[in-house]
Length: 385
Ligand code: ADP
Image (cartoon, rainbow, N blue to C red; front, side, top):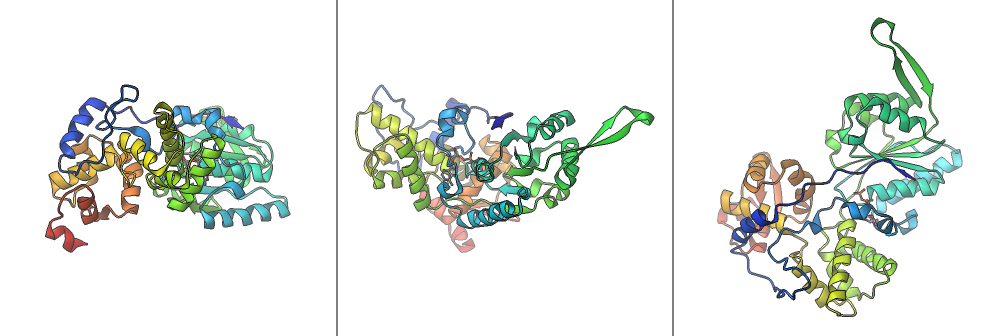
């Protein structure tokens, strides 16, 4: 597998200013159990913690982390319908000795799109080349990749909605006719040459399927959505990862981590590792439910998996805008968060658990969100629901 480039990282949070803002923002929230600083672990109770950001961190792209990825479809937990669709596609392609159809996977980060693409290559017995759309700035970037593919290879392009137009246009002929059209020369002497390509499967991943142009979307034979994972699926993922990491963890302890993982395997694995640190530093032994809860409280992750930013977004909506409706850009300006990050990273889970509604007039914090943060929802808010 060749990893060509990696995802750009979100900026580091400005801890001081945001923790100040937050301590105001949660003043009405009933305070959960706080563990006093012990001198070894930092006091994280009021700090913004990026633990729940579903994007991969640089250290999570290391070889050690790659160990955690399931390698075969049978090891891939959850996403039952999607797995069935892919299983049939794989079997049919193998019988016909063809390459798999081009596949577009969409859904929030951390749900297993990259993992699935590697699994597809493994199941088909072919190689997988990985890249990300922003790395394909110039025509020669994509041309080099396409020319380097072996027959049947999977080409994985992450964040495919961010492809530059010129690269996207090269992909059209490559996807449809396995042909690379290159223009030689300039001006009136310019001519186009077509170079045949090996048949390959393009797997595109995106968090914003609506941002894809229709000519690109139409060239995918399969378009599949990944959904958030249920607690019992995340439990299996935590237990599997604990097994790989050789950690002793009770089912109850693993369930507590699963509950706080926002339906996202990447977050489940990350929380498990932070809890492991906590158990180790405090010399606590077996990971029980109480210890998992204590450790995650320490990292300021609440029982529903909401973190600093989620609570801040909801708190600002409630305190400054009486729960909404309020526009995305206004929320972004009031919280200092990036509108796109709010929309792609934070909102999907808040919508999923029913804490946020999207309406034509803007976002609304639901009565459940008011209550979760320790506020009494106004009658108007109750009547909307
Ligand atoms: P995405 O590409 O959607 O951002 P990844 O495929 O990189 O997400 O998955 C993030 C991590 O979560 C992987 O390293 C893998 O260990 C774990 N993971 C994802 N999906 C599953 C799954 N269905 N079963 C087990 N682990 C999973």
